[in-house]
Length: 519
Image 1 (cartoon, helix red, strand yellow):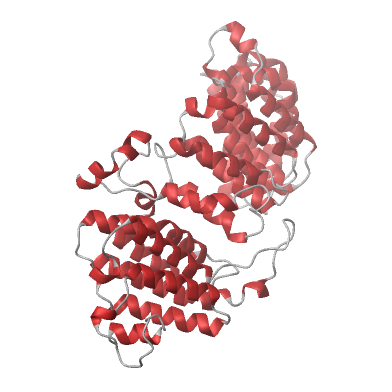
Image 2 (cartoon, one colour; image 1 turned 45 degrees about the vertical axis):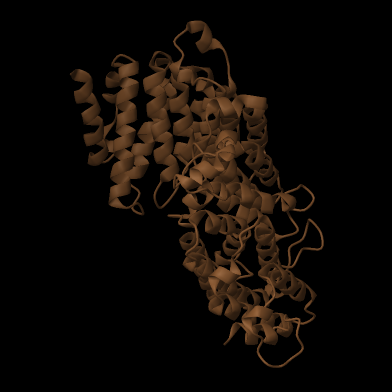
């Protein structure tokens, strides 16, 4: 289709003639873009918008790129940015009426069918930009203008959510690929961060960098698009905002994250503080990513690390196993930012001084003693060896609680994999190695429990052979460590075992302890 005929069909030409216009009568591109934006916004029906979007796609496919994108100017970049935003608005998600409830699936029913043609039109625009053979600086300027909203739109629709379908997800993924090609980015991380950092000096030398062949990222632009929707009052009104924010954050790693910490940290805290477990978990994942990818000095600046610690610590009182699991993992890494691990302290004075590690371990052990939910017991048991290992000899401050937890957890079966028991045996081994001078006085309590475990496991027909063997091996190792801590006193106790009361398998296990003791 001729350009003039297409413009006539779009009713954008200033002439009322039905005949195609000569090229000399075609209006400037900035004027056309402004008119197209107004038409998209003012369209009264879905069919009218759909027809206009389809014709706009054909315009980008057929028009000469030199006419579409020149002369390059700030005015042209603003015009294309406004048109792209108007296009994206045609497939915008409905907003929740308040900040407490979620919309039903039916509310998103029309979104996929509206998103597909928008993706196709934006892909045509990016394709025309990629085929433009003018100077790379001019093309890159236009790409950087439209890339942030296009990226946010693509991320919104390529995720498996209520507002997407298989066709809309495929269209959004193709749009993301077209965006990477148009800007010369290798992947999504490169798309956001570019070839270098984002400090002020680099921004001042932007033109020099472009001439040198460096590729700029769009992270600042994406955050500018998201920022108005990430306030305490508005973030819950659109279901996609939190997902786009989390996706963006998780793409940015060290060293690119630190300069943007002031923009990533508050929304992550806001998410983690929400009462819904899914939002809380998303926020904790974001915070953990920040901890792992930000220098400790930057986290401690402005007391951020302490604020984060307090926010996470209060989550230890929740009863959601999935939340507890993420929080304990995040805290383990955050504590290294706030203080040295107790296991690394050599000064006797420093070792005696309680710290945040003690506070977390004390609370975890207290909750473990009274916990009866299987899911939570498994989460606590999986995390405990890491904390005991971090404590080192300072675990002596918690030996009574550790002892009670060990006795309580070894008594309860945890089929089919017996993960709780295996983790608690690991805890006992680490404790025996780190605090061996304090273990001798606990042999009389711990040894009967371990022997009972050996007998019970050997006679449990429901356990798989590999699990049974693993349990028995770990139990024997605990007995050997206790024997070493008690200077071989367990040998005389084991000799008093009545062979008629246990199986030959148990006797063979105990014999290995006796042999090791004699050596």
